[in-house]
Image 1 (cartoon, rainbow, N blue to C red):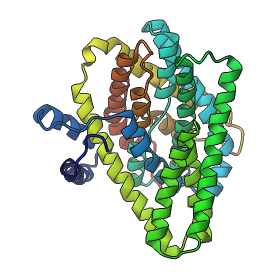
Image 2 (image 1 turned 90 degrees about the vertical axis):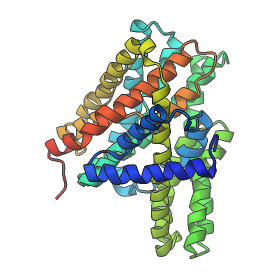
Image 3 (image 1 turned 180 degrees about the vertical axis):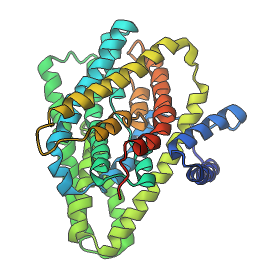
Image 4 (image 1 turned 135 degrees about the vertical axis):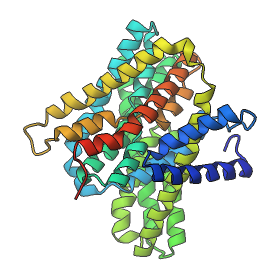
Length: 395
């Protein structure tokens, strides 16, 4: 990993362990504690330089395991039952959230349509790490857990596809509206097909062994193989790994992967997610401490407001359409989906990967880091309180 050596990794793990223990003792979100620790290191020990966050590090190395780990936890039957609602949230909802942010930044911050559009798409990508951690500590109802995690995963996939298409436009390919629509569909469908194909092939191989170590290794190949292969063919790596994880977590765990292998796989990926989230959020904190936000304070404040307004429009009106159906969502769930729409690793990865030709690139990167900081500290810290106030604790 860029800028990493074993000593640095060991120190980060020591720090993450201490933060996890203190956060649990104080009943605080783990991700918030990690970001604060990263900021503290950067401010108090400036010579102890943390490794830089790069788009390749986040997107190609750290993101695939996070998507895969979340996907293998999603049960197929409840997911299929909620599919119409989830599909509306991640299509119309993402379009509304991205549109509000893009239009607002163009009109009031004076950004170009291209820069504002790219910002709108990437800021629509949500990260449920802090929210899911709060769920595990407070034991919320299963349906709410599924809606938050599944919506965020699908949301990330759609946002990543939209960003890839707009990046192609930014590269000056002279694409027509028809070309853009075709590329969006091809990138999405291609990613899903590659993910399912890689997962199916490797699950069949896993079915020939009962060695849990081999089975765990095979799931690692599925997670990274699906992502990297999809990206190689200019398809969505996020959707590929998401699809692969759903297949492994359902078809793979129903007979193909042994009972002992299933437990080993789940334990392994839970640890990997813990490890990677620890690294990401500490490095985010280190980068936050280096930002000079005062030069973009107005744009940052505007971006935070637009992100919240866009998220509200992505949740409340869309879910209201299901008010008279069997998929009706309680108001308390809507509030959690709205306030739990934190921004995290994917938004940062996309921001750092912005094409050099975008005039507002440096400003967008700074603003995105600031929005992520707001999400982690303000929304993340208040999520456990909100869950309790809404009476969402399961029996």
